Length: 159
Figure 1: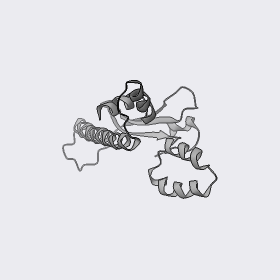
Figure 2: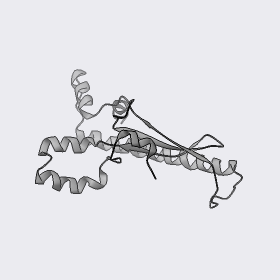
Figure 3: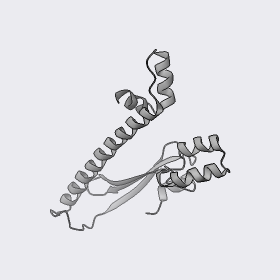
């Protein structure tokens, strides 16, 4: 699991791990095993992020004088978005809701214009084939494309 986490932290994937293992004369991890560990790592990160957001939201409510978790609190917020790369050509962006009193990020959304799995399957099956369309129907709910439109509109996405 540590080697998968290390490869992912470098922004690399299974094929990079395969090349590394071949060069180091190590046993090669199957892509299935790599993806299994990748999902476990993602689950841990999501759990930690959600726990942190819950704690931050509780702190923000307390800063506004609310002690009850069920209270609806009127707060001032700012919204900002950013891109992975400069300009309006990035495929990945993030939008953040920031509390004005504490400066804490109380919510966020990562937006992507690209899905690596879709790209690979388009190459393998052909984008206009019946096989691809059949595959996509099963993949649609898991697709990582969460933003359609120009990258410039990521910062002004309406929720």
